[in-house]
Image (cartoon, rainbow, N blue to C red):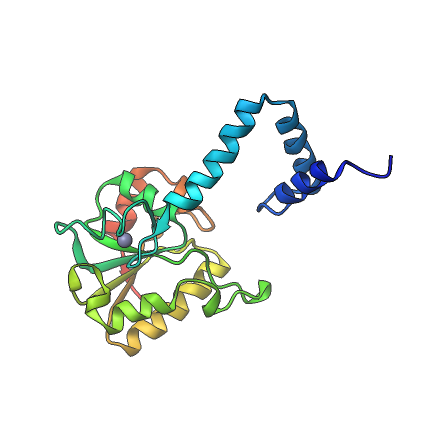
Length: 206
Ligand SMILES: [Zn+2]
């Protein structure tokens, strides 16, 4: 036998393209799917297509949502002048769980990583600058007064924070950063709600 049948190879290739999945894990997943019933495999395929077709990015904050705008940008009780910038949708979830932040968000969907070739065009930075430049592009058409930087405290997070801070200060927008109750290198989505609430309350100027 030269290799796996073509359909199996394609499935392994598809799994291997997922982040964090190496060749051997991809093989394991593919053979798991082959062992499953048709119904289970069908449910997996449908869940993937459902997520792709029903979920979009909010055109204001780029968080994932299943309506034209996300529930946070649509909520008139939120303080739209304060925008907390995070790397991923899961960070929004973690901060919302802490329950003490009343502003709104901007999700970068990544961070600057010059060594890996990710520059400003590779993440959602231009739409953030557009929100600063034009209040009609922000939620409730409110001008942004403060950016709270919530990037993870590591090299790439710091690089991203500095880039944003420079652009924001050119535009006269106040920039603060979450207080470092979060241990260096810690991930926002793994921090407990009390630590996140303290980090928001104790945010410092940059
Ligand atoms: Zn939104």
